[in-house]
Length: 159
Image (tube, rainbow, N blue to C red):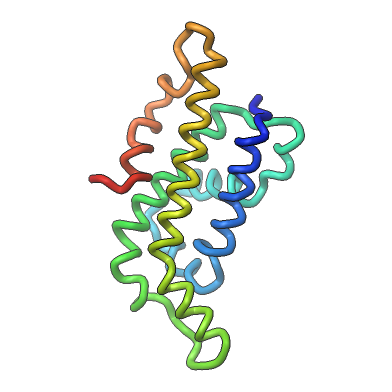
């Protein structure tokens, strides 16, 4: 179980950023159109919104890796399928404060997605570091999980 305070704080930051800047009420309807399997949405949801239940007992490393992988896939698909056409796909309120907030959410989405990807990448690198330390000369867990092969590429944004 992972109880590292740095990891816990990173997960908190990821959740706060995701809920406020990525999956907000203006952009969420568009994001839900992503071709992402339900188990990946569930993994993202657990990492970004349900961390309180794990914070005190610790996080399962394999589960964290799966959640990081789901977030990486989300970032990749969002960059590819949503980001180029987000402005035209968001239904903005006609006027008022909500229109201003909607415009801000759309305008800042690309940079907010990058911050999210950077935070998830930082978490991934920290988990790998802890994994290597815990492996003690044996093969680290991250090397046995095929989904992790593309995490770096998906988060950094290189094709």
